[in-house]
Image (tube, rainbow, N blue to C red):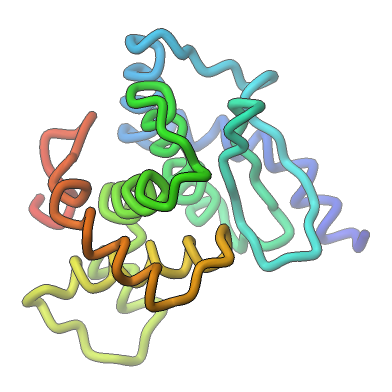
Length: 187
């Protein structure tokens, strides 16, 4: 492990705690998890690990644990976004007992996580894409693409089937903004 990777690994837990301090949405997610009877304990429900895959984070259903891969995360801001994304999966598991092996459940939680975080914001688009930001339907398109990418990493389903599953659940899951009053793109 390189010194830079080792340093990122050591700082992962500290940065996640900084995310709680700096990000109102993360604080709200942690509060709602507690309300639903699933209080988040950093020592129990968060782990920072290494991986040889191009992953930045995940939610381990059987351990009820968020996994962050700091060697693939470039900044504290990115870590906060990934942490928030995974907290949405934790909330969906807590409140709806979703089964991550069910591709319809997986698609729904991926849609919600992409939609409710900054992953599909105008600022994120401008910082990561050379394509023009087309206001009409850009957020929805981005959310579908993010959900598709996540499902392709997590399943062995053919792309056509992934696309069909996403389309089947999209409107219901996209419009489910719990625990937030509205999707950030509308703010």
